[in-house]
Image (cartoon, rainbow, N blue to C red; front, top):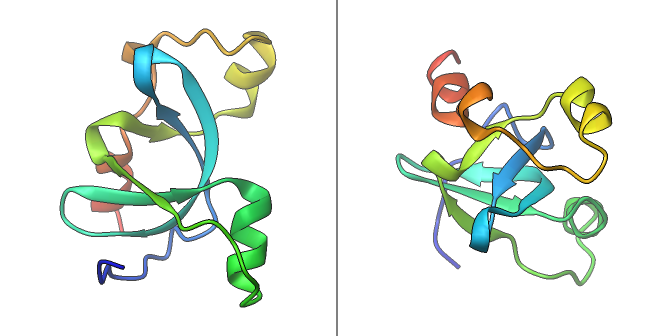
Length: 95
């Protein structure tokens, strides 16, 4: 596995833009300058406790956005207006 730095954002929920513009709600595991490793929340908990789990998947920071519960609720099927979301890269610079 690629060595990535741990971030204070570890465990934070985020929106990730997946193939075809679909959205996934995932948790941050770690990051480097350009990539954020993300995990399904159930797999994240297993990783956190040292249990067998699927490895986190790397996403470009440009495809990761701040999670907003109001947006998730309002959009039910999670059709997101990506331009209205705060990019993760902006969040990681605030640390």
